[in-house]
Length: 493
Ligand code: MN
Image (cartoon, rainbow, N blue to C red; front, top):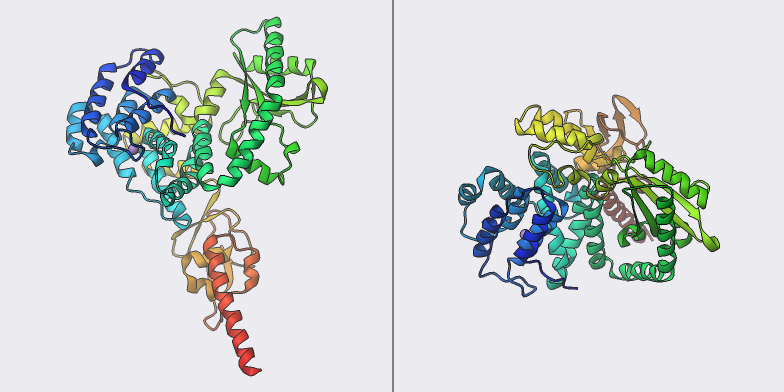
């Protein structure tokens, strides 16, 4: 599994060729500092430590992050691992890089403490992100390289890191629209967490690629020819194979019925502008018959994370079907890099590419955060976006309790205290008495009616309790009730 290590020369040539006028001197100074700081350290893989910050910096350069971010990537482990202080980083590299390095160092102190602490961790990550999303890019690149070299870690550490990645990092990457990162993080973690399923899905994909490879290249050739003859310029056609973890999730959703999955291998056409997207769709439909119900216009109706493309599945030769995804270059970059596309190969001062939805919001928030105006209000807006699957309800005292979507007063009661759950006999939402299985909505004020004489929870609550916490408390308490009941029966008998 080891991959070849990046050198400083690789980094320099990548940056030199993809950026307009990069400060290469800054990068070589940052490299020299990092190399000196980590000189005596060796990774578990047996490599000198410097290969790690180099890999992180290289990934950031691939993303098109600004050179300051790449330099911070080179320096990200320096403060923790060496005698070099933050002040020294600041005096050599300036405030911006020092603040990035400082934030990444602080973020390391956020430790994963199991699923129950998930939201809390997510929130801490999020707070770090809200102050500067570039910190999260560095953290993702750091995590990615650690996953790529995870084989060298002991088993218990592999599991913890893979689980944490799947539960915290990948969803955040998803919310930020960074599907490239999300996919890589998920597939690497998947291999460690569910090795058997990973093997199975891997086999499915490689068999399909073997079977359909020649066919897909034919379709690509035909499409390229079609577009060229119709006079389209500035377009690229390529194949894309579905990511392993994403296929695994989809197989679960469709009861392992592979025939229901149309996008295992898709053909992507990246074209000049929106008009061309629709024109190309028309051309494809003229050549091949579309499958009914499979035409999706995410151009006029983007997905909630801003994703835009036209999708269609068509019958080609011999009854074969294939999905096409048609989009502009800008949409393509946004789909792959999400919020990071915003900064791709941009120097400070250049205006960011025209953008959509919350990405625009995010840019505004970043700007306003720098002068700390409306900090909390802006945080609220972001929170709604990032925590879309969560709901926030209030106790009568005004404390905020966050719960997953679909949670009920029983979940709320156990979130407050086990005794409140166990003694719960009814609930009021916004002053009205409701059934205990009523789904809560954000901003509800929830009050639990307790019965001091109540023996414990009702096992039927398991039918609607949503949180792991409430469910395990109910199981614990009902199990001991049943046990008590059984033993009293035995005594009687
Ligand atoms: Mn690191």
